[in-house]
Length: 194
Image 1 (cartoon, rainbow, N blue to C red):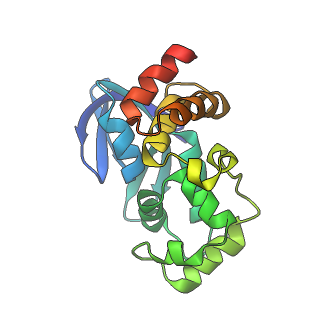
Image 2 (cartoon, helix red, strand yellow):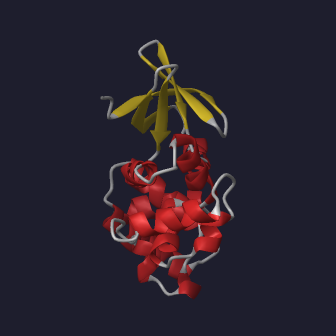
């Protein structure tokens, strides 16, 4: 099994990325969350991989963080949720927020995702609510949660090799001082702090 692929980003669009590793281009299906992280990466990227091997196809799914891949694996373990549906869920709801949606049993938010009906949404919550670890953003009050820029910065820092806890601590401090920070500025400032 392939754990990750590191190489130059040869092609990037919201649905997939092609990573060139020593002259071989690996096409991986990605979520919008991973796409946003890769937009900020110049040159080399490291993507964690899930291989879906079927009779008619051998597909690779790429993730900017191990955390996103873990959530993907949990989602596809639910009956009725395939790789494409799991990718659609992760594209619609960022990983940290998805954990909160499942923990908070917010069926309506899952139902809003294209391809997820009421029964599937309920099954996801029932099957996964005891398996997920609610992420660091739940430590913040609802009003203090910085949102998309925070999630992007956290994913990028984790991808760079910093722990989620260390990254959260630095970002929490930065976003409390300036909630309007862009993901790019937050990453730059966090790197100076760590």
